[in-house]
Image 1: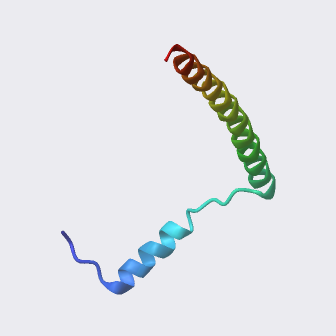
Image 2: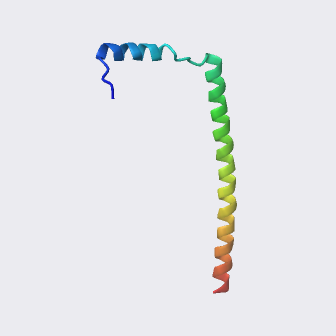
Image 3: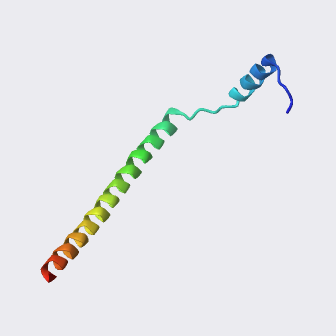
Length: 68
């Protein structure tokens, strides 16, 4: 492994940092809206699945309790 001097390292960091492309305000806003929308949809979906399976388990438990 080649050793890098501190000065050369700092220059490499500056070079790499200059290649960073930051998203525009519009891109950031659109991404944030999509994240909120998708997490909301997934939350509603998993709430529905959880409610459905909860009802099935309650039905099975009441069915089993009636058989005893």
